[in-house]
Length: 77
Image (cartoon, rainbow, N blue to C red; front, side, top):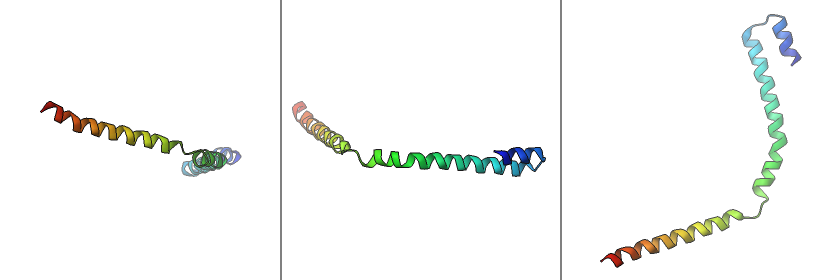
C-alpha cells in the first residue's frame, strides 16, 4: 500500500500506479483463496455420498414417469 502512495506522491505514470494497484489486489485475492481452499476441498470431497441418493430418486421418478406415459396411450385407445 505504501508503494502506491509513493507512486502517487512522485507523480508517476498512471499505468505504473494502475499496475501496482492490480498487483496488490491479486496478491490479496490469492491469499484469501489459499486460506479458503482447504476448507472448501474438505467440504466438497469428504462428505458422505448424498448425491447418489438424489440421483437414485431422480432415476426412479423418471422410470415411473416413463411407465405412466406408456400406459396412458393404451388406456385412450
